[in-house]
Each structure stands twice: as C-alpha cells, then as structure tokens.
Image 1 (cartoon, rainbow, N blue to C red):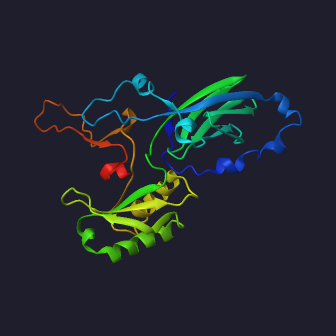
Image 2 (cartoon, one colour):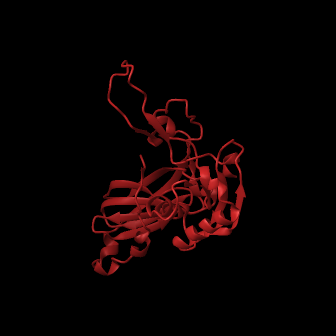
Image 3 (tube, one colour):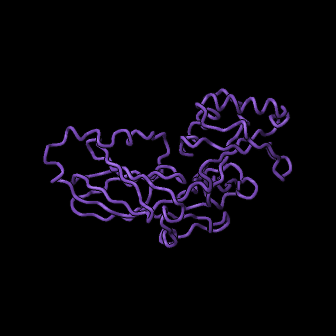
Length: 274
C-alpha cells in the first residue's frame, strides 16, 4: 500500500477530535461498529545511491520491519471518516493496533516520531478488517536539525549567528534548544558554518521542520543564505523531483538534462548527523 506524504501543514487536530463526535452517534452505535486490526511496518531507502536508477516499487517494500519493535516507540493511527469524525489507535510493543469503527470510507493517518504524517486515502471498511500499514522512514534522528550560515553570512561571527538562532526560536515558540547548539565547520572547503540543534520533546520533528521553514524561507525575516538541513534516510523513487524540464529533443545541441533535486536534504552533515 503506497503512502502519501502530507506536504502542507496538517496540524494534529484529529487527536483533538478523537471521540468528539460520540455524542452525535446513536445509542446503539457500539453494536454497529466493526473491529479493525493491523500492524505498522516501516522501510528505508538507504540502499539507494544517487547514481543508480530507482528500483521497482515491489523492491522497495521487500525489506520492512515493525516500527514499534525496532524503535520502541508508538505509532498513532487516526481513522477520519467522511463526516470528519475521528477515532485513534496506537501500536503496542509488537507494533500491532486494534480499534472498532463504524463501517464506511476512511482516510487513515499514521504519525510516528521518525516520519512525516502518512495518509492512506479512501480506505473502505465494511467488516472485520486487517490493515498492514507500510510507511517510510524520513528522519534518522527524531529531535535534531541543522542550521547553516553560508557564503557571506559565515563571516558575521558566532555572536551574531547565535542571535539569529535565538530570534528563530522565539519566532516559532521555543521549539529549539538553542542554548546548547553546537557550532562547527564541515570538512568541505567553502561550505557553511553549521549549528547542530536539538528540538524540544513537546513537538514531533516534522512540526518543527514546518515551523522553521515558514520562518527561514517564507516570512522574509531571515537572510536567504540561512539554510536548514536534516539527517535523513536515503532516496526513494518518489523523492526524484525534476525541475526545469524542457521537452525538447535530447539530440539537439541546445538541450541539457533537467536538474534533479534529491530528497529534502540540502547537505549531508558529517557522519549522517550522529
């Protein structure tokens, strides 16, 4: 079953809606519900390299592991009906979950500490159902980002850099632990001055990422050459985004291959950000 990344802000309002619609159900609604069980498995694409063609989809899902077994953390599974009502389940130590829902059409959202929210859309549940949900690792760490000061910004000095970090943290409501941020220079010549910053435990990493992106790249309050990066897993076929494509004749001397954007990482921190 393919996953669909939630690319725009999809705040965790569903958790607030769990059981919120219960008063609207009829008194015999429990008799109308059907059991749903399943597991949450996860895979990564670290075996891919940037010079190899992406494998077939069937190969992607051949090496999965049970999320909660491997990480020791729970996955939240939210069933959202067409009426907007939500029911939530969580995985146990074996990465299994069980819940009862009213028969109908559902969007299923899976949230973990290692991924962006994953959507399984238009899932019909009419009877006793088993759902082996397969999602993909996005983040190798659950509480870590990097902020870089590049080009001329690398010359402003550590005091000014840390002031920018404090300003960034204030603008996103204290999601970062900036006082302990570690400053270092990557080994590559001419690269950025980097800060290794842990995030607070109150937020999932994807929430921090979206907040930081909103400030650095959208708000206009920070210079263009302040960047963010993440310790992420390898590429999957859906990560291959081609931009600048001109459908011309490859045999034409004026034709150039399109630029390829690999995933969502701007740079690779030393040792994968460990």
